[in-house]
Amino acid sequence: MEFPILGTEPLAVELANTLYGDGEDFLRTRAWVDEWFAQVGQPAVDAARARALRDSTHRLFTAAVEGATPDRVDVEVVNGFTTPTRLELDWSADGPVARHRDSATGGAAVLARIAACAIELLVGPDALRRCTAPGCSMFFVRDHPRRRWCNPSCGHRDRQARYYRRRRRQEVSP
Ligand SMILES: [Zn+2]
Image (cartoon, rainbow, N blue to C red; front, side, top):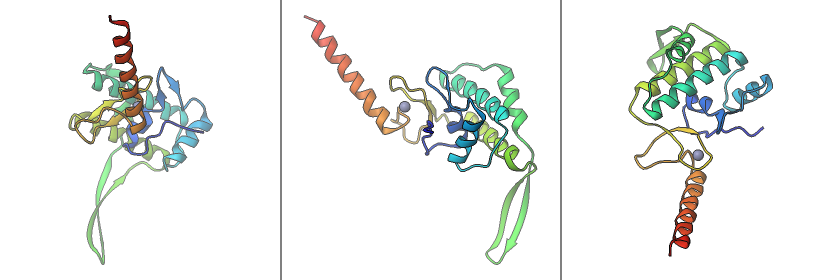
């Protein structure tokens, strides 16, 4: 199965991108959910819960890139996925290390981490963007100020489309 996975983005962004284009749902079956989580290197999760978190994250990210205020329900849904984490000290021969221990385990812990990641992206520096290439709607975190596309091939397609639009305009004008 070929999923719209960029491979460079935080997991919350990759999850939101499973709702692609005009709403094509790459998590629409249980088998696809299992395969998607395996491809991003995570343990299996509850499919219905994964879709619920994905749908709300997608709407919150959309609101963020459009500068809109989202439905309160989506905020509550994402909050419902986070779980308390405890800070613990570990001390080995290499010295002291701090660890965040999640109160959830397995699939629930994965979804909790994705929800926390989504929250951090929404309140963090203004870097969440949506690809501007024709037909693409993927979210990405802008890692340099001029980046407008989710990946280089979208950048190429977008530049090409602009070029042809300009040429057509020149051809029709006298
Ligand atoms: Zn794109």
